[in-house]
Length: 153
Image (cartoon, rainbow, N blue to C red):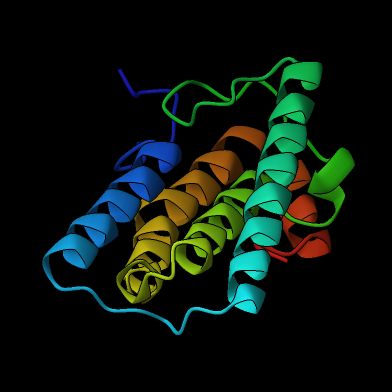
């Protein structure tokens, strides 16, 4: 019997947290700073707060629509309202804002450098798998949604 979920390699919040912890460990072992000043710290705080708000609102839209937030559970509805009118993945946009925000707020070059492999893993190990699953599950309505709305921003 075929599973009714996209088979992502890891839950996205855990993936982001893993990279944050790895960056923190590298920072502890071999400190590497971006170039701390108040502007970057403020930028980090703003990005982090914006990311939290985006993630919470996007997750709330899933709850409002009555579908599962966790990508290891079946999708029961295609969500196209709220922030999903602008991005097919606003929760991932929010998590990415939080990630970059924390890199700047903590002045961590390691966390910043690890963003590239993190986003690559998100793309290939999560997003592309979800897109394939959603196309199979929802068919033409999902394909139309993909044509109208960007993947990220």
